[in-house]
Amino acid sequence: MQAFSRRAADIQPFHVMELLRRARELEAQGRDIIHMEVGEPDFGTPQPVIEAATRFLASGDVHYTPALGLPRLREAIARFYQDRFKAEVAPERIIITTGASGALMLALAATTDPGDEWLLPDPGYPSNRHLVRAFEGVAQALPVDAQTRYQPTPARVDAAWTARSRGLMVATPSNPTGTLLGIDEIAALHAVTRRRGGLLLVDEIYQGLTYGIDSATALAHPALNAADDVFVVNSFSKYFGMTGWRLGWLVAPTPLVREIEKLAQHFFISPSSPAQHAALAAFEPATLEILEARRTEFAARRNVLLPALQEIGFTIATEPQGAFYIYADISKLADDSEALARRMIEEAGVAATPGLDFGHHLPRRHLRIAYTTRESRLLEAVERISALRA
Image (tube, rainbow, N blue to C red; front, top):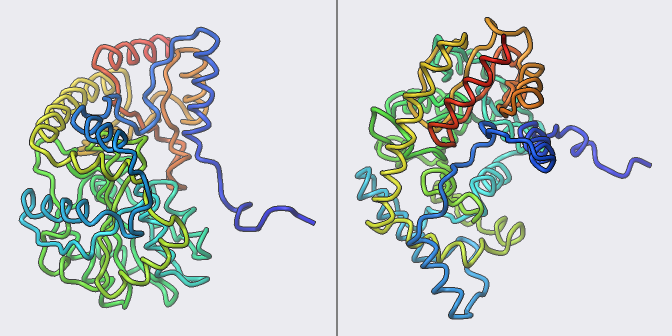
């Protein structure tokens, strides 16, 4: 008898984590590895957040919270939407989750029946398609390319929609391409999904990390804010620098909050209590000042790395305006990005993620390169890659 389910067999490994494991093995052997593979900021947790967690832990009052999260934190997030984006979001619609992954799980579990299809841009975040499969849905790849800034268009969504389509997922800023959707563009996509009787899920995990353009939220658009068929996912990991705390949130339509609460009770009981109390400090002025300084640093890194990669032969067809990734075409340098990534880590000590992780649309022509380390190391990485070519 097969001990594991067909569902488990269908889930592919997260290749970037496999790459990280190899990088750690090489480091244990004394090799110097420049990490440009994992989507994790190199900055530590902001000090006001650490201090808030320390005060809370010192109290010893570490117990379960409500399944939907601390009311104070839900209210703080609602104020953040109002203060930064002029978007009115009722705290009752905000569900605190175990990372953004927990938010995606809850949204999919609440809406997906066996065989339901979700349209996912390809390339896109790899876990999305596997989470759809985990809830017995079907992930339908929607190929996107530089002509549309690696984002879906209403016409492409409409053409790909079938009788079994349940919804569309989009991300802004996106992983792996760092491209954005404006809120009017999201509203146009929503018009298609609504006309088709489907759902729209907007991933705003990298919100706040934009360069040369103000960050935005779909919830600032009246038609999207009031819609009963739109979900918005966010996280404390990226802009707020709290990756290891595993905390995110989901903004759900009011009619579905109770259904999601029931699922959250059984899946998680509650999000981490220390993480939630720490996150209360994420919206303090002192913390936001730190985060904005970090955004400036990410912008400087991007501005240094982009031309340096282009100079040694990488092609960047669409300039990223957000997140901290460059999705680079390697076809002038090699035939296979996976093979190139292996050479880079083994021979040059540079870790980057091959396109294979992000879908099936021309993955072997692309590498995702993260600028999550300091400028001097980024430039050193480029020198090592250039020497590897020679």
